Image (cartoon, rainbow, N blue to C red):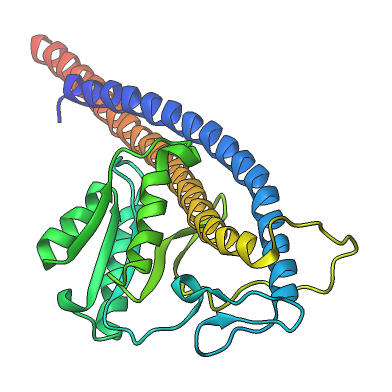
Length: 301
């Protein structure tokens, strides 16, 4: 390999490493910011959980008929929409991927595990309904002929509730309309900056509501507990979906940060190897020139 060609490769890889290093720093900044946003939102989500738990304690047990009853309450409220298990004819899956690349195996891991999950459950295209976040999910759905009830693309790195509200409300609406009889959240959970974990969590129906002991403060609720709880349960489900989206965005930035850091390290190693080859070739050229000069001098003598 010519020295000029090796030098061009070194310069090219060096420029690429500068770009990947910059992208790694950007992803690190975004990761720290989304972690802060998630932490702040967790305070709100915790309060929602506590309030729901306190109200559920007040209204009592849920009967199999789909009604919440309590001897202390004069009203009977139908919570069938979000709480009661129906015979499962179709399963809904909210699959969260990223439209952006350069995140290592972030998208491929989600889709591979999701497909394996469907195979394990023996569910085909006729058994599921998909809410797709990101073009990779849509590509899989088109390939497998999955029914897509809603899609969302180009989700911002720091999504607000308003920006994903249509998706969140659509999930709850489709469940209430019995388009599907259960809803699962499919995404990558961020354990820390270096580790993500695939998750498929059931959200609807709300069978695993939080429970807690009686609150230290007695709340004054108007108009009454069942009416407030009827609204609050939808908000609880929506808060869980939004929290999942923030978690998925955190995992995405962590994956992109790792991918760019690894790309920078690989570029550094490649430059070192090429520099070694360059030095070898240059030394070989110098040696050959010395041999030629010496041979020429000897020939003249």
